[in-house]
Image (cartoon, rainbow, N blue to C red):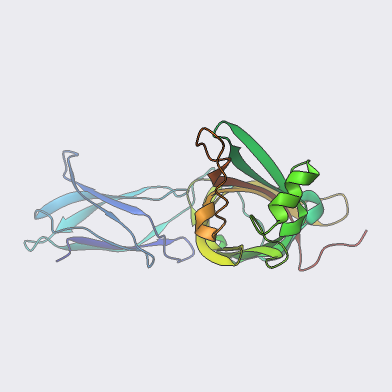
Length: 273
């Protein structure tokens, strides 16, 4: 049986998944805590009867506090709670299609070498788009990277990375990511869950996204910038190169850090210069 229930929504009426409902007695002692699910619904365990304080918090939103009356059965309801953005929350880009500008976007991958050093590789060709919704959290995105453009600065190593022992670019020429909405974690940060397809395998991946802002460019357009990071495990994508050096240390680490600096142009196509 539930105790105190609430339906937590944004100012625009969208569910705020991950919002936290905390209940204390009038002396400040915590009685219960609940996290809102995907529909924005939060409900605690049954509570002591009487008047209590309910506080609702969520990253990027101003907290809400109000009194809650709990019945003799230990139940109560706050109804619908609307959260407004924090005063310092950034202004997100205008709704509509935004196209990745490959000339001003960078994808860097870092792997451990011999357990002590970081080897960086750049992918030179990335494209895609971000479709920004009226409510930013409902936006969706798609990106694709040409696997054969991997570049570490050493030709022999790059050829090895393109081979069947690693990326196998002949069979799997594209690395793709399809994003499924955003989950706010701060004033200018979000998590974007999605599906990454790499080396013929598709796995769920969370991108930690930081928004850099948007504004006019010198060519009459409008641009927006995002930085994103995630950590991948080679085994998840069947990239199982397991060469070891004499002392038993893996030549290439099993985890790979991915960093993306993405610049987008407003509209569904890039400008021609």
